[in-house]
Length: 151
Image (cartoon, rainbow, N blue to C red):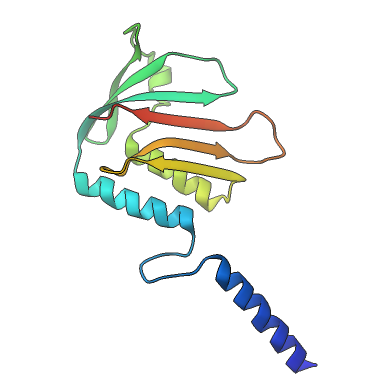
């Protein structure tokens, strides 16, 4: 009986081992590996001050794109585009730095969300598009964060 249990355990372990082959320097989780690689690219760029255009797509009231200004790890100003109207302070608190967007991705990985799709910038590594569906059984809780024109 113990031989059969051992053989079954060996088969199960080998099957799961094939799902995410682990190579040196990786975690075996493709989402985590992509995040680690691109976060390292972003950190290597040493951008302490930058501006980007942000758009959130969700089952929520639509709004114009937002031009976000970041200095030394803090969102310091934001305005709607193309109207150029300033973002109200309460909305300003909801805007993220690129580093905070990486944290959102990490949380989605840690929480093992139903669906996570991330497109990273090839040169600087920052997330350009992040789609998160926390639970496939819940409607209208999906959110997409879009970052463009970072400079």
